[in-house]
Image (tube, rainbow over all chains, first blue to last red; front, side, top):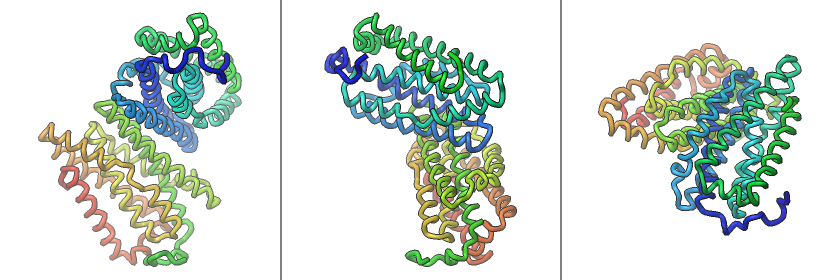
Length: 226
Length: 226
């Protein structure tokens, strides 16, 4: 991979529909992440922990605002741009509703990380200003330190927590892949952007390998196995 | 210290415990408002409306962050400062859980407005820098325009909505008064600050009259009766 060098497909070849899809899926992802993190914060064992997850949720809304403003500035309707992705996220969240504080933390950490890695890869294929917006929207909201520390405490207090949360992490990835496939099947322009940008179907495999490697590293850093 | 216009009670007379109580009650109020608005946003009829209420909730967290930072800078523990007020807010919110989108809107609008008016009055009795922080934390998050417009639409679409939501507004005020009385009975320093700042018990009546007048104006502006 050569991120510093020009992307495989020059930005000018990118279909506007694909850029709109990218911004739309990202925007609704932020809104639904806000919603779920805010709800999950209720499971926090302390007011301090609840405030920490609530603060992360609030940051998603500032990203959302920027993405929506960009869609509007393109002369497009942000609601229409998000509409095709609403069900995908609702299904994902319904199938990965955390039942414990540990699950909520791992979901915030792993989910945000996976999404960020994926969108960063895709952003390489679009114009510079869209790319910068996407990178800004994915800026680490400080989830890492907080989640790593809190999950570490849970594992230290309960020896069985690591294996349960590792299983949960695998389930999150499985659902994320399944919803991504669904989007890929339904959104032609976005799929062409990714396949074309990556340099063909074979290269998509490498993109997935890179995302998987980062996920594994993330799980390890939090004391969990992949 | 000499602010532009001297407050009724010079800031130096204010007990530190009262300032800490003021910041603590305000901070937990913001955190619980975030939590409830984020949950209420789920009732929104459209993604756009849901995003609007979610955005307002997110702003409460930025206020929360500033208040907590201030408590920490005083060398105090923000969690300990908020602790005495947790139950009060939880009881208030449990007793005023909106069942409809209209109730959620009126609660966001009326609740925020009432709280802001009350804290602005009390902030007059403390030092300038605390006052400025409180004013900043109460800066209108744009709730007014959105809520006024949305409630207007609801009333236009359903002639019975106005009387139902007017009743709901009165219930919100009743619960707010009842929880305020509870805090007043339990927090001596804060109560002394307010009574002393206002200039005595008789003047408290005028303070309540001012808040009530603003509330009535707010209800009228949203098309509801008090």
